[in-house]
Image (tube, rainbow, N blue to C red; front, side):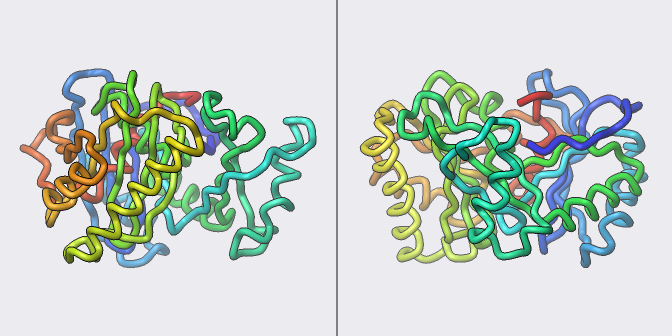
Length: 307
C-alpha cells in the first residue's frame, strides 16, 4: 500500500509483522511460491510497550538470523481509517493534496499528522466509478515504526492495511474465479472483505470480535452484520454472490458455531481457515491459538511488488 524507500536487501525472502496490545505477530517466508509455503518463523512475541518495538524486533531478528531481510508492516484496524470517498475533481497527480482537506473531518487527529494513500475499487462496480478508497494513518506512528524496523537491522518494504493483507492471502487459500468473503476475527473487531480476481469489491469493519463471539446473542448479531453486507453487495452494488463462499479466520473458541450459523443464514459454503494446510513451519504445525494472530502478518509477507 505505502511503499518505503529501501536499499537492495541481502537476505532472501520477506518478513512481515503486526503490532497489537497482545504483542508482535511475526511471519517470515523464504520462498512464497512453493506449495505449501515454507515459513520458518510464525509467532506471537511479547512487546510490552510500543517504545520497545525496536528492541523486540531486534531480538526476533537475531534469534532467527534475519538481518538485512525485507520487512513489511501491516496496520491493524485501530491504526488507520479506510474511507470510501468521492474522487476529487482535480488531476490524478493532485488527488492526495485535495483528499487531505476532503477527509479532515473524518479523522480524529490533526491533518498536519496525516499520511494517506489511495487505491481504486473494482472497476466492475458501476456505483464506485467516481470513488476512491483512502487509507488515513498518523504520520508520527509510521515514521517511528519505520525507524524501529531499520534499527532492528531489517529493510523497510511496504506498509499495508489489514484488508489488503487479507486479499494477498486469497490466491493461496481460495479459487479467485468466484467471489470469496474472507472474515478476519480479531480481539474486538472483525474485518470483512468480498473479493474476486485479486480485487476487493467490498470491505468493512464489524464491531464484534472474538471477545464477544462466545455468546449466542453476539453470534446472531455478527451473522446479521455479515448478511447485511451480502445484501448490500447484491442489491446495491449489483454483484451476484450466489456462488460465493465464506472463509472464516482461525478461531480457537466457538469457530464451528459461528461457521454453522453463517451457513444456515446465508446459504453458502463456509469454511474455517487452517494455515497449516498452506504453510509449513520448520518446527511442527502452527496451533490455532497462534494462527488467530498471524493472518495479517502472513498476508503481508505474501504481498507482490506493485500490487
